[in-house]
Length: 460
Image (cartoon, rainbow, N blue to C red; front, top):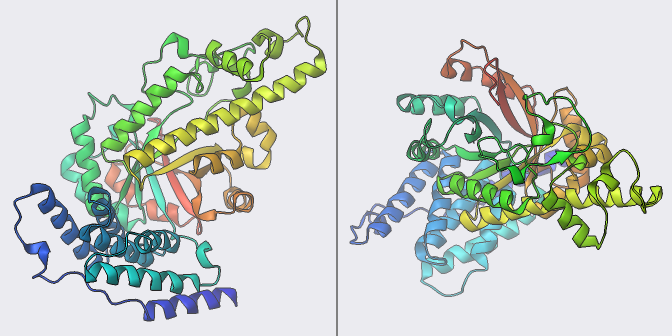
């Protein structure tokens, strides 16, 4: 009954949706101006309306968003673009995002010409109508599917259009680029990356960039940034010693990560994906810098050997050591969540509509204490402090159940993703393999999906 009521409400809303039409051919869009920037904005607005009329709503949303971000707030072009951005989101089923745009439009500066006032009045009316949907503002967004790909595996420029169209047919909405597997300045120069992102946007696809924060792949690591451990462990699956991983809490290393994120965003990426730590031992790893920050924050006089070593140091009682140890674990995990929040702020500063996605382990969902200690993952803290979206990594068939469990914890299922591996034959051309993605996306019927290709060439 509840589902039927929702569908009936949506049908009624569509029937009574406002009829504000895009500008006619005689409107200012076709006028010639001496200002190149204004001409570019009007041209982009024209393309956005064309995409909307052709029912290419993801492309229309991207175009309208770019107009909003590049024009003066409350200008006629900005107001018009924001209204149609909300309409595009509605057509995509993303009612939460649509309401956010209508709310921003309705609460803008009063006044302006009659057309601006009409958009504002219609935005207020649309907000009232959307609130009548059962569940109100908690209506979930349309399903999204992202495909991860190293920069080195991008097809030739001549094959971009065909490949992007194949992705769309397979149900993919986003391309996730990983620069860590290739040298940005040699294998794929920034101009090529920017051109690809532009082509993806024209096709109606979003593009996100990957940051390997815990391992520093693709970054020249300085010795002082590296963490060490007092516990001997084996070699990690990627062949790197866990004790030689970078310390995510080192201030200088964080600055380099922020710079890499800025490069990706300025190249045109619509969001940033933070990869999870591969190996266990988060709580055991430390650098001189992070341990000093910890002891200073709590006024402690204790060494790493006393806290993390095999034997209890002089002057540190066993029960005190255990209490301080868990204080250390909690401080490290919260510090990581704070770093993620800083990345989110950076995204907002560079690209207001940009998104942050944080990968976490499925084992953290079922065993939170182990996830906290071994990977530094506190799901609730990461979710609420960073304002990002959680990507649940799991290699078994428990994914949907894990998503439901996390959704109950955080209360926002539209901001959750499930990772799925897509096996790639070594000899299969990229375009040919992409044709088979549709079958993979259908394996998980509900929820957002992140596909990471795997093959003998060690794709991510």
